[in-house]
Length: 196
Image (cartoon, rainbow, N blue to C red):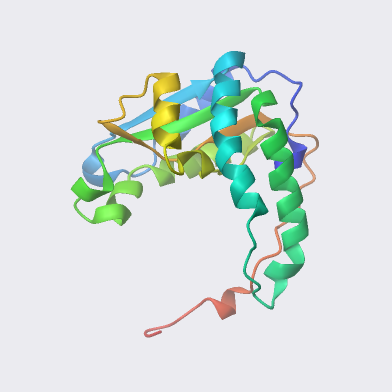
C-alpha cells in the first residue's frame, strides 16, 4: 500500500469526514468516545511531522531484524523497501492523520488493552472506509518513539498531558485498486482451541 499511494491527487476534506462519520460507529470503552482526530494537510506541518517520523524510522529501518525461518523472511525485502519509500516521501502525502485518545493506558480500567481498545477499532474502521472510496493508508507508529510524540504534539497543538496519540497515518488515493491479500502465516499455525 505504501508505494501505491498517489502523492499527487488531492484528497477532499468532505471524503475524509464521511469516512470519519462511519468510523465513529466503532465500539469504545464505556461509550466514552474520548477520541480526537487531527488531520494535517498544511505542507509545513506535514514536513515537520514527517521529519519526526523520519528521525525514528531511519534508525529502525537500519537496525538488524530477527530471522523467523518462514514466509515473513521472504516478504522482508518488499516490506523494507516500501517502508523506506514511505520514509522518504511521507511529507508528500496529501493528508496525514493522528488519532488521539483522552487519558493514558495507566488510567484505563483494563490497562493498555482497555485504553487502546477504545481507539483502534475506530481507526481500523476509518481505514476500511478509506479503502471503499479508493483511498489507502498505512498504520505507522514510529513517530511516537522517544520524544517524538511530544514533538508532534507541540507541532500540532495536541494537549500532551491530556491525550495519547494512536499512530500516524498517511492518506491518499491509491494507484489502482487491484490489491491482493498479503502473504501471512496460515491461520492454523496461530489458532488454539480451549487451551494454548
